[in-house]
Image (tube, rainbow, N blue to C red; front, side):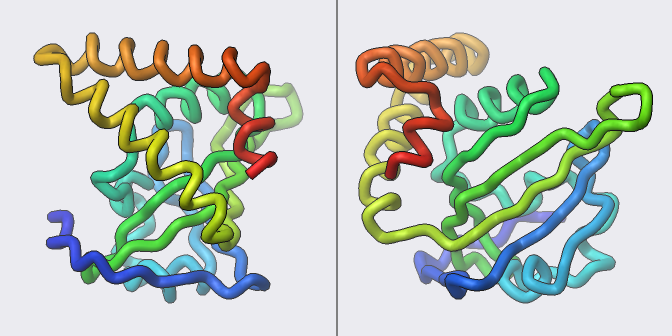
Length: 172
């Protein structure tokens, strides 16, 4: 599925709306609620079986998704601010709470994501950080080197504040 041309138009979740989705271990969508379909503009048929990054906005640093995947693959939950795009190219910000799903033996079988609305204050704080990470990623000809450098930049920022990424995000 081809990503749409971006419109620059923001859509906002209502304060009481929650986007819910589930994925398999490879990040392919196995469940999506009505709020997800409504805000994204995709039908259930268009979402189920597709990689969750079908909605990933180009303003999102790869280093944030590396942190997210490393965290949940390690069996831990994460909170993250994420900018997504819709089917028609609009965008929306969410505070994502992503958790691993375990079977009875304690093996990770998939992931659950619950996404809520964000405050303008949080967006104002996170946008320049993400822009800096994107700039660092793009500064390197080698994508892996760019990802590593941006990940280190993020870790240095968090260390300078004496917080984890979750603590930083939840403090906004």
